[in-house]
Length: 340
Ligand code: KG4
Ligand code: ZN
Image (cartoon, rainbow, N blue to C red; front, side):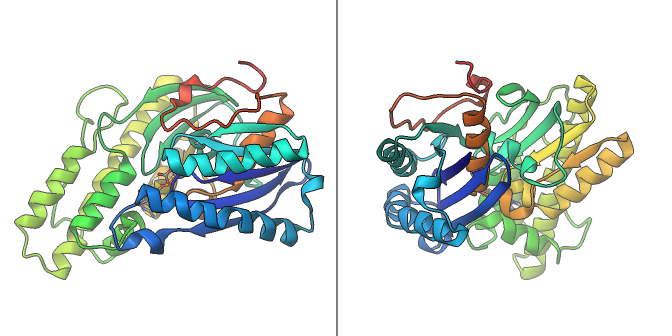
């Protein structure tokens, strides 16, 4: 079965075709970064309007590129949440309308389930069960994954998400939006040891995170610094190191608590090189393994949505002909395909 996946939950219009037999056939993405850059963050109304402009042409281009036409599709999948409601509604309406017109099934996909299972798009895929570290612009979660739709939340952020802390700290340092990759790049120029940031909530038991204090620490450190280029790089370095070490400490605890030794990193911050290297080192020391998607499938993309849609449709999932958009949608509310 070939499934067309549509992702429009935030500032990327993305589509992909996933075949249950052959895997990923192709994917296309249009990033709105340039559109929002001048505002220093995503402007929801502009995001929705741009999805309206870009999504259908992306689908047409993708079908052409893969030498397929709409009649060869077996189903549709669209991101139904969490995300910006106006943006979600665009992909949901297109997905549902196409399904209706073609007489095909369509499934609403949870964006974070897309991220969580994205490492399975790679040839060397993890086997269930595993611990997933979900780190994006809106989420910082540790999840125990027993199978598709079988998720137990082990830890969550009490305030800011990791990506949000990266973005806000980057903005403070005058870096362009989106801040995460820019801050990581600048950190490479930083002198280790000049500043030391706190590792929040690592001195007490538990798997929850808190990243708003570290952001405030960045503000005061910057204010009291010479505010030159070297100070910027040194702060970026110390910030990134503290965030990564905090995540690694919590991952180690989650593995110990559950007795598992496989990890998956997913979500935009999963593209962070230091995080990937540090988790590699941890897992080697524990005799386990960490899996991550290629960097382009860490950040938002259509492939992860087509993939989950295909798993769910093949598993017998069905949905009524309703356009679903849920800006807030806890991951743990999901169930395995075909079980409602
Ligand atoms: O998963 P994603 O593309 O969108 C959401 O679902 O939120 O994640 C975007 C987040 C942004 O906060 C961005 O700054 C961060 O991921 N990010 C990074 C890196 N690449 C993207 N953060 C740190 N280092 C990176 N290399
Ligand atoms: Zn995402």
